[in-house]
Image (cartoon, rainbow, N blue to C red; front, side):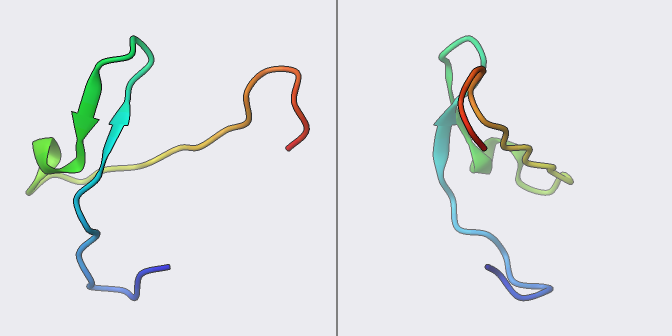
Length: 43
């Protein structure tokens, strides 16, 4: 977990279409990350 005011390290994840998206693509913008479990899995 990051402390308030600490910048997150850059990372890359696939979007819903499988395109690789880097956090750096959003530098200077507000970003909300939403993680959810895959359908029909516990979580």
